[in-house]
Amino acid sequence: MRRRLVVLPVVVLAVSLAVLTGAFWLLLHGWLRRDADALLASRGRSAAALVAVDNGRLVLEETPGDEAVETDLWLYGPAARPVLRPAGDRSLDAAAAELAASGANTQVVGLVKLRAVPVRDGLRRVGVVVVALGLAPYRHSERLALGAALALDLVVLVGTAVMARRLVGSALHPVAEMTALARDWGAHQPERRFGLGPPRDEITRLGATLDGLLTRLAANLRHEALLSSQIAHELKTPLARLRAVAETGARYETEPGALRVALGSVVADVDHLTGVVETLLKAHSGAGGTQHADLAIVASRVAEAARATRSTVRVRALGTAPPALCDPDLVERVLTPIVDNALRHARSTVTIRVDSAGDGGARVAVTDDGSGFLPDEADAVFVPGYRGAGAMGDGTGLGLPLARRLVRLAGGDVRVVPGAHGRVVVIFPAVSSDA
Image (cartoon, rainbow, N blue to C red):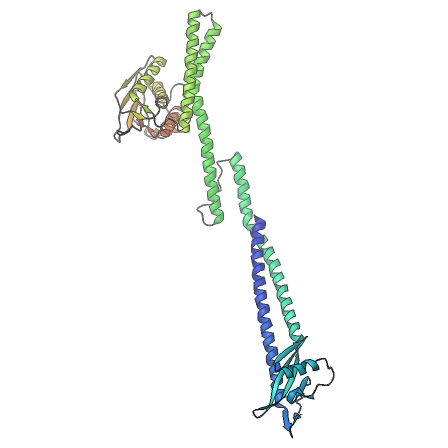
C-alpha cells in the first residue's frame, strides 16, 4: 500500500514532466528556428542592398565607416553565373549555386543554412545573392536548455519521491498503529476504545469505525457469555435432580419398583434437559417464529410444575388470551424463571394471569405477595447477576434477564411493575385475526 501511494504520484509527475519538457523543447526549437530565419533574412536583405549594376555588370559596393560586408556571401548574375564567392572554404559553393539556379529560398547543408535573395534593378531581376548562417550555436543552446530541463525534472522527481515517501509514511503510521492496537484489543481487551471524538478527518473516522467494530465485538462476546450463562442456569436444576436421584439409588437398597420410578425420573429429567437445550438454541437461531402457543395451557403447565417444587406456596393460573405468535416451548422457558423468581419472594401465593394486551398482543402477568420491586429496580433486575435487596434463596440473578432476552427474540418484552407486591408482565405478539 505504501509503495503504491509513493509510486503512483511519482509516475504521474514523471509523465507530466515528460509532456511539459517535450512541449518546452518544441517551443524552444520553434523560437530558435524563427530567430535563425529572421537573422538570415536580415543578412540577405542587407547583402542585396549592397549590390549595384554598373554598365550591365553586378558589383558589390563598399560600405562606409566600420561596416563590413557579409563574408559568407555568393553573388550570381543572370543564368546563375557566379560573380562573387567568399574566400576560403569552398564546400558550400555547389549548394549555393544549386540554390541560386533552382529559385528556392532556403537550403540546409549540415549545420549551415543558406538563403537566396533576388537582386533587382527596378522591377527587373538581375541576379541572386546567397548568404549563409551557421546553426551550431542554436543547436548548442537547444541541447543545453533541454539538458537543463531534464536535470531539473530529475531533481523534481527525486525530491517528490522522497517527500511522498515521508508524507505517506507519516500519514500511514497512525493507521498502522491503530490497526495493531485494534487487533490486540480485539483479542485481549475488547472494552478499550480509541475515543478520538466526532469524526473530523480520515484518522478520526477510522478511529470511530474501529471503536464501532470493537463495540460490536464486545457485544458479541457478551452475547456468547450470556448465552452460556443462560444455558448453565437452565441446566442447573435438572442436573441437581439427576444427581440426587443417582445418589439415592447408589446409597440405599432400592426395591425394583422404586428403582424403576427413579430411572423414569432420570429419563424425564434427561428429556427435560434436551428440551431446554433445543428451545434455547432454537430461540437464538430464530427458528419457530411462526408457531402458535396457547398461553393459558402453557401457564397451567408452568403453574403445575411450580406447585410440585414449592408445595407451601399456592400457584394458580387464571384467564385466557388470544394465541401468541411464539413457540410453546419458548413461552414455557420464558415463564419458568419468572415464576421461579416469584416463588422465592412469595409468602403464600403466586398468581399467573393471562389476558389480552391493549395493543393487540397477549399478556401474562405473574404476581406474588412478597415484598415487590423498588422503583429503581425496574431496569436493574434485568442486568445479569443483579439480585435485589429483598432477594431470597440461592438465585443467581439470571432468571429475569434470560426471560427478557428470550421473549425479545420472539418479538415481545418483559417489564417489572414496582409496588408493594412483586409483579412481572410479559407481552407476547399475538396471532393476527387474518393469519
